[in-house]
Length: 102
Image (cartoon, rainbow, N blue to C red; front, side, top):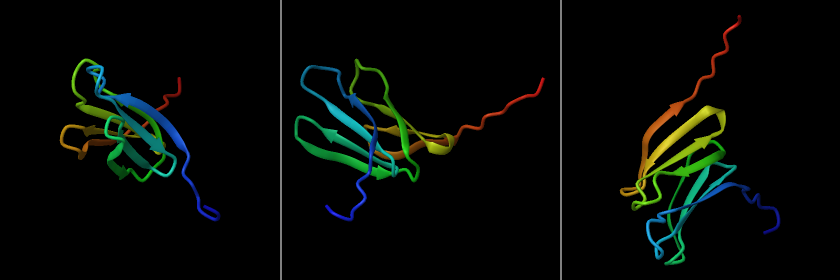
């Protein structure tokens, strides 16, 4: 639409790939939106906003039903989400980089 800011998608990952029938896609956007889509049902399963742009997504093991999703965002934050119950945050931590002078 004219005049609307459309968010850019910064990362996409397949998940729930434990068999040939199940598939979801997780998409993270520059505005902090995280959306999980079910490809079989062609519907949005879950979405939330993490306040900072989503830089990376990673599902846990491929041989089990989706369990956890790690999401990294701008400003050094990462979130571990429980994908079985859709609890928003299992962990929310900020990574602090320390540089030591020699």
